[in-house]
Image (tube, rainbow, N blue to C red; front, top):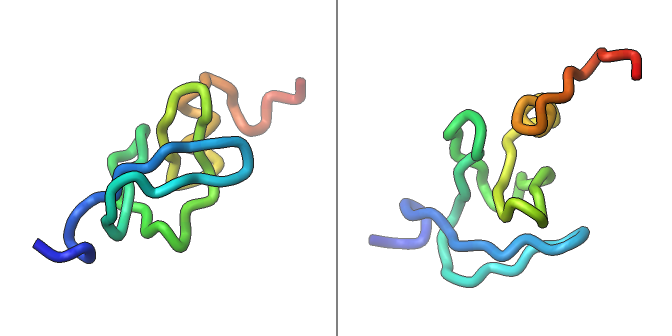
Length: 69
């Protein structure tokens, strides 16, 4: 299996992430969608998980995007 067809194992830090085991993508913790590492923008350091979109971040943390708070 080559790196293009397997998930990476990633350690998420504040503002950056470290690839622990080579792969080409991670999975969104909310949607299960593949996220190419070069497109990875959203993750949680606390939960050590990735998110495909900002909406997925809000879904994971039960915060609606337009809550007005």
